[in-house]
Length: 367
View (cartoon, rainbow, N blue to C red):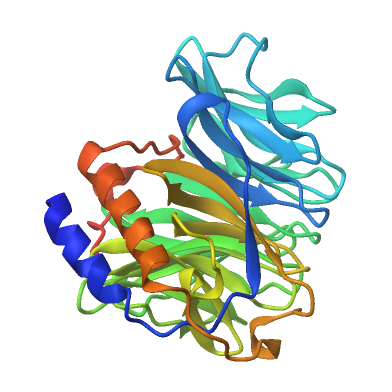
């Protein structure tokens, strides 16, 4: 898509009414490069993710009161990314050593490999139990190898050791699952299409992810007890990646062909860009939310991808408690639109290498 057409579509979006600013936006910093994304968040507001350094390599990072810390430097790994963090500050992620992915847990800043080559660590609970994928293409949960399918990966794990992830059940067909130590796999359905993908699970057993519809588009879902609730979209396909104990969901959806971060709360999907007043920012993806309502993800600021954390402004505890206030000035939206158009046109983006056989997945539809 040409940047001029993207500018036009985003300029039209500038007229969308805003619920008013109820979140502040914190830029989580950089490791010297041009891109950063935050993927995980704990109850204390400590964020983890991946950022490029001055040499263009992607390194894992953590961020708390002292700014962004490089977790990959001086570990012997060339690249890495951090996917999740628990209440104790243990971090699960992946390092690349001699070109091979290695599931890794960082404890007190020290990186420790927990599996062999080709493995990924994607989730960790407060007991330190990790889920992800082994080098043989099987999901794992702690010391349990989940062998029911030829290919599977865990993505989230709760306090009871329940795992949310997805598996290839037939060639080119993927289904989200919940795995429980006592009962094994339970496959999730879809929203009328072929595939579904489960990405996170809370301590109540609620699961979020995305599922294909009969139209070929994908919608974010919330599953409680196995049934999939269609969370809708902001206009095109939508994808859920995180939820908290209250059942609040975050992810992203396409708006006029561009990704916008969303919060789903009290039965409504809300564009997070309508809940901030931060000139220059476009929040493009949200990946995690904690019990306090803090949200992390990535957005565009001044033509580059930055990791962010959202915090409720004083007096607000949820979206429903916010009063309708004046929308941000259109000029602020226009600056954000220009920044996003520039970054798309110049292709300044990166994505971490996750354990997904993408060549078999359904093409992402932006709407």
